[in-house]
Image 1 (tube, helix red, strand yellow):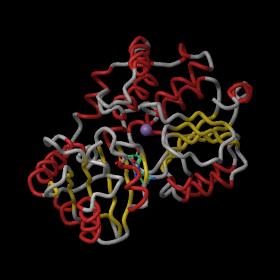
Image 2 (cartoon, helix red, strand yellow; image 1 turned 180 degrees about the vertical axis):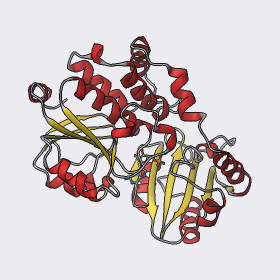
Image 3 (cartoon, rainbow, N blue to C red; image 1 turned 90 degrees about the vertical axis):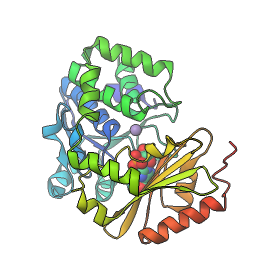
Length: 337
Ligand code: 5GP
Ligand code: MN
């Protein structure tokens, strides 16, 4: 880490600390934030986790969830906390534009910033940086930081479970190529520290509403296509579809991965209509850098095999653009790779 000694020194005296993460936090974003918050509170700091938006119900079991401040609807309080913070930790995103209006507040704050992330192309706004695209999850980097600070034994069962949730989900249940021996070593330590991994898995994955299950069935049977002559599958969900299944934040999480389960499919996408825009997720196998396509054509980015973006065209236009790109086999979609 850049300036680890200086950060350690800073943490020697009680500080006012804000931890923030990206919009629609996932298990890694929230687990990293709450795991780190638990640690920093143990060191005697005053800590507040601020998320730009709400997050799915299947993450609310994490310790500290009740004290998370959701920026949307609490802008003034968030502004006060960010303005008066000594340190702002930015977790699981690399650019302040990814956290909306909260990003401007963080940029303007006189607090020193700490960036901890595993995405590509980090923006240079932080004085302290722990950044590695080799890391499977931000939770891995939080563990590494605590270890570098010599404090692994301070990790409680609750913190271990929050960090485990980040590792479990960002590695696709320890299946993605990002799953290194180091990841498994961390998991072993988290288990020794008391993490109940079955409980975490149960909380995250066995927590769907019946509506969400029905939406999954509907999407698989009615909203999934394979683009002819290509190894590309996609889903879409209209506003009507979402209404029909009483759509809640997080209900489409993981859906895109089912496309990759089809024999010979190497790229999967999902297009979700969302109040004047279309939110897109992409997944790919192997050497297909789907983040490049997302960055170039869909205002997005992300990791090589898991990326996302947004389109301001209507759903049909967006899907047609994607189909054309796929059928034209842009060099970002090197199917032979
Ligand atoms: P998901 O498909 O799970 O929402 O996102 C997968 C990954 O894509 C995220 O970890 C994030 O790196 C990236 N991502 C998702 N949406 C966006 C976006 O709108 N802009 C950028 N730059 N990256 C995104
Ligand atoms: Mn992550």
